[in-house]
Image 1 (spheres, each protein chain N blue to C red):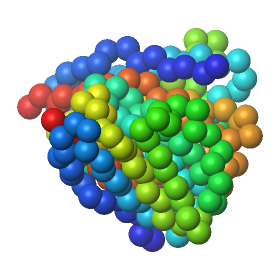
Image 2: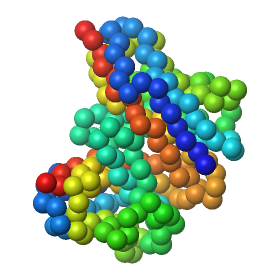
Image 3: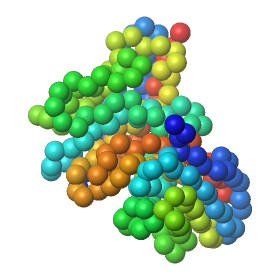
Amino acid sequence: EAGVAQSPRYKIIEKRQSVAFWCNPISGHATLYWYQQILGQGPKLLIQFQNNGVVDDSQLPKDRFSAERLKGVDSTLKIQPAKLEDSAVYLCASSLGQLSYEQYFGPGTRLTVT
Amino acid sequence: AQSVTQLGSHVSVSEGALVLLRCNYSSSVPPYLFWYVQYPNQGLQLLLKYTTGATLVKGINGFEAEFKKSETSFHLTKPSAHMSDAAEYFCAVSVDSGTYKYIFGTGTRLKVLA
C-alpha cells in the first residue's frame, strides 16, 4: 500500500513570494489533514478535509493561507504572500474517515522563507 | 480542551539502557493517546496507541506505554536502547468529538550514546 505522498520535499523562497504544496493521500482515505511543524514544536493542525469539504480550519491564517481538495483526493496548500515565520515543515496526513482515530503522515515539505 | 506536556525536550541514554520518555495529558473526556516517532527529514510514524481496553500498550521496535488515568500519564518506555532509536518522539492526544483532532506535545529528542 502506497503511503501519503507530498511534493516538493524542500522549498526555499523569499518573503512576499507565493508557494504551493501538494499532497496525495492513501487511496480510499476520506479525511486529509495539513499540519505546520515549526522547528522545536509539535505539529499544529492547519486544516482538515472530509472528502472535499472543510471540517476544521480554525487555525489556518486565512489572510495568507489557502487550501483546497478538489474531487476529494489530492490537496494543495498555498501561502501567499509568505512571511519569515512561515518557515516550517508542512505535513500532510490522511485517515480512513472522520471517525478513524489513526492518521498516516507523509514525509513533509520543508519550507524556508528568507 | 485537550493538551499534552512532554517533559524533557532532550533525553540522552546509553546504548542498552532503559528509555523513558514522559507524556502527561489533560482531557475532560476519555482520551485516545498516541506516540509517534520522527526520523530526520521524514514524516511521523505511529509507534503505538491507546484507545480502550488494556492500559499497557505494546508497539513497534520494542516500545511500550502505559495509560495511567490517575496520573494522566502515558509514558513511553523501552528496556534496552539501540542506536537506531535516536529520533524525535511526539505524544499526541485525541478525543471523540465528532472528529479525531490530534493535539501534539512539543516532542522529545532522544540521543543514544555508544
